[in-house]
Length: 144
Image (cartoon, rainbow, N blue to C red):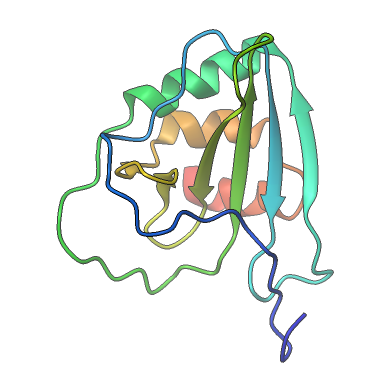
C-alpha cells in the first residue's frame, strides 16, 4: 500500500524490440495464475491458483487465437490495475512461458518483447473458472 493505493510489484519488460504477437507454445502441462488486485482493492494482496493441463491448453489456445491490437496510442481510462499473470509450465528443458492479462480498461494480453493481443470473451470466460473473489466479480461484469 503506497499513499492509500494498492501497488503490487509485477514483471515488466524493458524497451525491447518486438518479436511478433504474444504467444505461448501448445500442450502446456499446467498453468499458475497470479491474480493482481486493483489499485483500490482491500485487502491489498494477490491470490495464486494452479490448474492442470486441460485448463492450461484452453487458455494457451485462446491466447494464440486472440487478434492483435492495432498500432497507435491508446487511452485506457477505466484501467484499475487488476490483472492476472499466467505462467504456463511445460516438460523438463522448457522454460515457463509468461502472459499478463489486464482485466479492466483496454484489457490487453501482453508479454515482454511481444506485441499485445486483445482480450477475447473466450479467454475471459475460461479465466472466470480460475478467478477467486473479487476478480470473479470483475470478470462477471465484463462477460454479462
